[in-house]
Image (cartoon, rainbow, N blue to C red; front, side, top):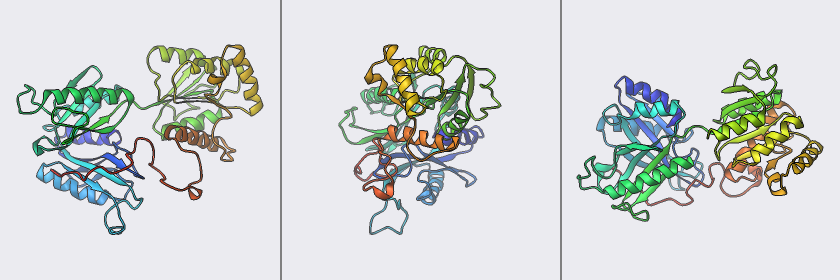
Length: 395
């Protein structure tokens, strides 16, 4: 939802209904992850994407139907040998898309959700996408780390024939997913049994974007900042030298900070602004900057720590780190020389190689050329579900 949120809120504030199609489950080689959304506006515009082009036409028609009928629909799209030339995913994957109508009456909390996202505060939108009781499909709960709004299984008074125990289980699981930054579909029984059947709930975690910290205000850092923004990171460039760490040299970065790298990283960690998704790239080539910031980074649970330099430079760096008490196990966490071997020569190509290494480590890829590999390709990462669930019932 994040990529279409601004347009959705603009329509909502004008009182205009919008159909929102959201990928709630993926199987095998799906082109877009769970949470990818597409809007169908009341003036017949399509905004966003759920499949990269494969099924957008069908979702657009379904969205128009939902706008008129006010009834949400959970629809599966895929491809098989028998229907390879009909609407479907020619990549061989499957996606479940939930299409619902959103307007101020059906989603009164949307403005507050958007405000939380703008403030970079975590918030999750929890929606019932399948239920034995069709009247409950489309009910939602908005979850913040310290509070929530709405229920999905019981009325506000807990007397609608639904289950407050199910609400409690869903709220607990949604907060767990939000804390981990996971967007996922969960399945429950009527009383919130986590191995039950009869109810599917989609948890769309709109947590703040992951951070990329680029230490070293050099030309490679400018290219890395552009790449980080392109990949969806909140990018900070930090250097202790004010003549180099300027906004004019790094117009793409969200923040340009003049500070000693290790001091800045320590302060951000102590303020709770560093998490397991944070990526650190050390590009300074200067041991008086590199060694202290790497020591700080190795004390944290980070997604990636990369340091630029030749093998000889890194060997010298390792000696200094060992003298500071860093262990071999800790040293193994540093990606140096940084990036994958793409034959990169320019700063931009080097940024691509670093980004490729980050992506590969994030999703468990082995950086093999796909033309020489076998098995699933893009989208076959750990959060994708390997086998399709039973065919979803439509409301």
